[in-house]
Length: 291
Image 1 (cartoon, rainbow, N blue to C red):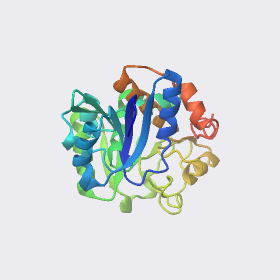
Image 2 (spheres, one colour):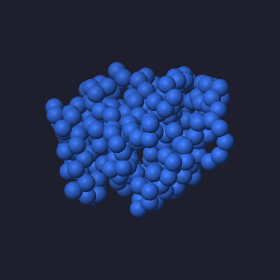
Image 3 (cartoon, rainbow, N blue to C red):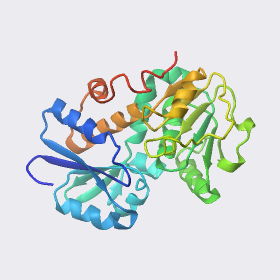
Image 4 (tube, helix red, strand yellow):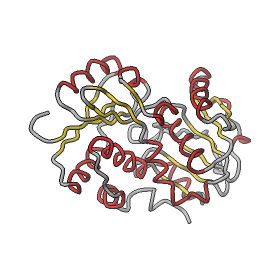
């Protein structure tokens, strides 16, 4: 990093595909702000020391993605109420040398789904995955769209239990179930339900993989939300072909970035121009949405 201006970064692993730099370049142009935003690949074991060095190097903030959304909390001075509720941080601000953590994924997902608010209300939800993005999805759908019973799926009973304990503290009235991926049956996929893929499967690094069971049959009148945002996502394409409302993660990505920028600088930038500049008509948020 060199030169004047504001400096930000995305920290994670195996994230060269990310569109976040393009989003922030657009934000800088629209706000007439002199800024830089880069991708930094940081291994789990080096997270703490690298954060300290980045602060010394003058960075004003970081976006946080897989696999650090939960691990980063141990290295922060404080976190906001939403991050505390979902026990996941995807935005860090550097303020007077302190590291302050936020969760803007909840805001981003809620913003991207607002056009489907009436269709989401009162539906049961099945969440594929139990990490930070999954927790944010549960919180957003319950708090902002009044969905009903939630089933969270994962590979480990211990991880599922940890996820549920965190959510129950802040959503005590939420009917919450868990399933191991290996235990899912046809009875778990009911007509009219909301299916959320909060795993990397189907995303840029796992295009040929799917979080859905083999021989999966799409439920009728359902809604499929995939937090990945690559155009070649097969599950999104299949959901659309089966008549479901299908929404990808591009709107969430832009929304969380705009909120992060507001936290870092105090400036608000409108959603639509940024979204259209980066994704155009490629995105499932617009082109794959049914109805």
